[in-house]
Image 1: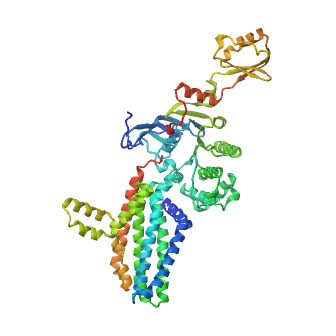
Image 2: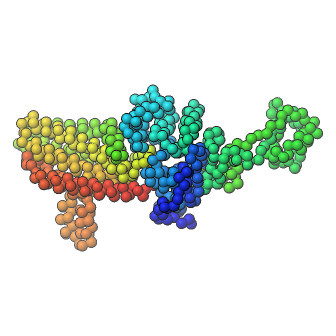
Image 3: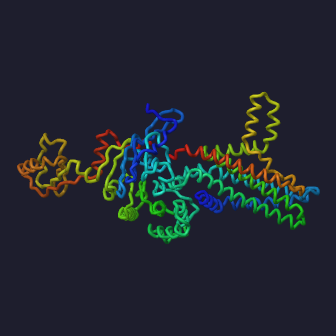
Length: 336
Length: 254
C-alpha cells in the first residue's frame, strides 16, 4: 500500500527554487484515500518537472492520466501528498505563486447572472487590476475573443464555445507571465480552435510561458516547444517535439501497380503492411532500412513503381508507442 | 480588498436572483395580512402588526439563508466556479469572508426594506411612538441574520448543501431556545447535562437579538444591550468564519 501522509509535509520554502524557471516541481505527488474502503489511489506520483520561461510546454496524456491533478496542485486547488513545487520561485499554494498566473479550467463555468464584461472586470480586479484598468481591459479582451457584440448577454445564455472564449479572456486579462490552459480546445469549432491557436502563439511572442494540457495531439505538435507525456499518474518522458518525433522509427510508403498477385516473403511479415487500392497497391514499411530490398523484390516480381514516400512519424505515433511500451492502454482511469 | 470584491459580486448575484424579490414580496404580503387581521385582535392590532412584522424579517431572512447561504460554497465547488476565484491570488479566508459579507448585506437590505415598510405603516396609523423601538428591533434582527449566515457559511464549507441546511436550522433552533436548553439540562444526569450545556454554549445566543416583545409595547431597549449584542454578533461571526476558513484550508477541490 502506498503510504499517505495524513498531514501533507510543508513545502521546503527555504530551498533555493530556481527563479528562472516558470514551473519547478520535485517529487510532487497526490494520493487519494477512499473514505470508506481506505483504498489508496495515485493521482500523481513523484513529478519532477521544469518549464522554462517563455516556452510553450505541452502536457500530454489520456483522460485520467494526471494532467488536471498536476495543474490543480500547481494552483493550490489540491494539497500535495508529498514533494514540493514552485511557480517563478514562489512555493505553490501561496497567493504570491498565483499572482502571475492565468488559468483556463477544462469546461469553465461562471456566474450565470453576470454579463461578459462584468465577469472579466471581476476577474481582472481579483488579479490585482484597479477598477478603471479592469473595465478597459475587459472591453478589449471581450472584443479580442470575438464576443464584443454580446456585451449585454448574461453568461447563462452563452454557448459552450463562447464560455471557453470568455474563460480564455479571463485568463489573459491581467497579462500573466504563465498561462495554464487545461484542454483549451475542447468544445470549440474549427474557427474557435484556430483563434485559440493564434492567441497562444501571440502570447508566446510576448514571452509568456504557456503550459498546455491536451490530448488533441496535432494542436500540441503545432504549438509546443517541448512536451511531457504523463501516463498513469507518472511523467514518462519530456523532450522537444522534434526529438520525440525523430526518435520514432521512420516509415516508408511504396506505391506500385502490377503487384496484386505477389506474395510478401515471410521474412517481412509483420514489418510490411499491404493495401489494395483502385489505383494500385501500397506497401507501408515500418522499417526504412528495408526499402532497398523491398524495391528490388517488387521490381523482380514485375511490379511498376509509382512512388516511394518517407512518412514522418507524428506526435501521435510517439504517444501511442510510449503508452504501449509502458503497458498503459490509455483508458480513463477515473472511470475504472 | 479581495473580500470586498467577492462580497460585491455575491450581493450582485443575490440581488439579481428572483429569491430576493420573492422575499420582499413575501414581506409585503405579511404586512398586508397583519392589517387584515388587526381588527380581529381585540384592541391588540398594533401589537400584532409590530410583532408579526418583526418576526417576518427573521423568518423570511432565515428562509433566504437556508436557500442561498447553506449551498453557497458547495454550489461553487459543484459548478466549479470556485476554480476561477481560487486560482487567482485570493486566499480562502477572503473568499469565505466575501461570500458571508455579500449575503449578509443582501439580508440587511431585506431587513431594512421590511423595517421601513413597517415604520411607514406605523406612521400612517399615527403610532410614531413605537418607531424608535421598531428601529432597534430591526437592527437586532439584521445582526441575528448575520450570525445565522455565518453559521450557514461554516456548515457550507464542510458539508453538502442538504446537510448544511439541516445543521443550520438545527443550530438556529438550539440558539433560539438556548436558555430553555440550559434549564432542561439541569434535570438530567451529569453526562447528558454537560452535553446539553455544551450545545447551548456553542449555539448562538439568539434571544439576545430578540426584543420584539419590547418593541410591540413601544419600549426602547437600553443602549448597552445594543452594544453587547453588536459585540457578541461580531465575535460569533468572526469565530464561525475562522472555523470555516480552517475547514476550507484543508479541503481539496477535485
